[in-house]
Amino acid sequence: MKRSVLLGLFVTASMMASTSFAEDKPADLCDANIQTINGMKAQLSAKPELSQRAETSVSKAQSLKSEGKIDDCVAETSQTIVELRKNTGTNN
Image (cartoon, rainbow, N blue to C red):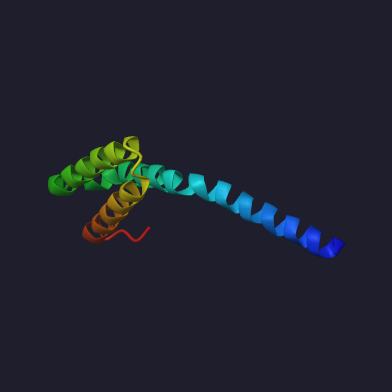
């Protein structure tokens, strides 16, 4: 009986801890993607259309983040990073 109770408490505690850590992940990923795009701007100076795409994406992502639409922010920035890497030949 004691083992069952202890196991139940352990499982409950680990589930609660995992959800509290997961809450911060999307916002962190959104911020990380914005930083990645900003970091790529030096490579984009020779290609004004890509530089403009990066600026537009960062503005849109920051707007989405401020509205609380973190998933949309992550989707926007992730797609932009893929496009920029494809067009600049960077695989980082």
